[in-house]
Image (cartoon, rainbow, N blue to C red; front, side, top):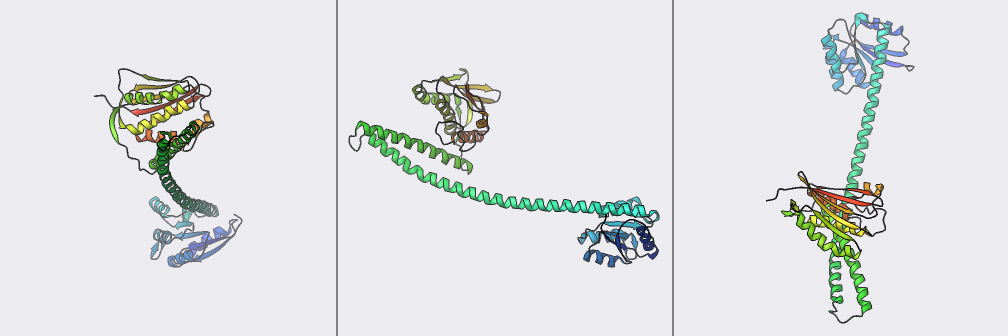
Length: 383
């Protein structure tokens, strides 16, 4: 230590103070030493002035060292303290260390070396503690800033989602009305139309229906995110539901020259407890995606029992999904690196529905070979 240290000794014994002074003068330390013979005076000095280290006599009139240390620490004094005593015990030393002294030295063993070592150690520990305290304070301040930023961000996200929900809801009504008007036009309710007009109206109706599907999906996502989605639970056969979905999607598959296959163990009904409409939405999404992203081959829905779980695999022979897209495929608005249009909401919503049923969707895929989306759900016993 090259700097000049400000030291304080609080001891009512002049001879002991002289011995400490001499020992310090024989050291290589650069210091200024202030001496007082009263615990009260010493305490007031430590509270009002900066010192690098202070020596406290354990036994002084009207106040022992332990009481003085407790008073100083309770008043917020952080200065390193070294206790000095003419006689003491291990219990005294332990109590002093617990109270907050940096070291405990018997006067009978005081020497230049022990004093220098004690001062160096006390100041080093104190400065390290100050650095840790400062780092912790900065960390707390940083944490508070992050909390404020997170709160602001959450507020902005909520405002955005509320706006999107209102906008989506407001869009849905005119889209439904437009669909109905287009149906009536195609049925020539308002008069005869030419073949060219029919074709144009069919294209408009298809686009309007696609837009309505996207709006409905977005509205469902925001309902899930806001915790407003309530499930209408019942016990039903997943086998029957899958058969309905395959029959419904078969024309879409056949139109693309694809085969759609339902692979189920004939002996099982696969009963589950859940919201049939929501699970229908989920499975239809998986199977519909498989058809959309497959140009040749087949789409297979495979239903299996695995202990207490039901496994539904939707397998296709499409182009597959690359590893980067797989990592984020269930995130909202993620479409992947393909050319097919979509909202990027379907798989996100499907995973949310699966989680609400204590289930999960996983995916495995190989580029050029196809993909397998697997839905696992808890199984209930058949009656």
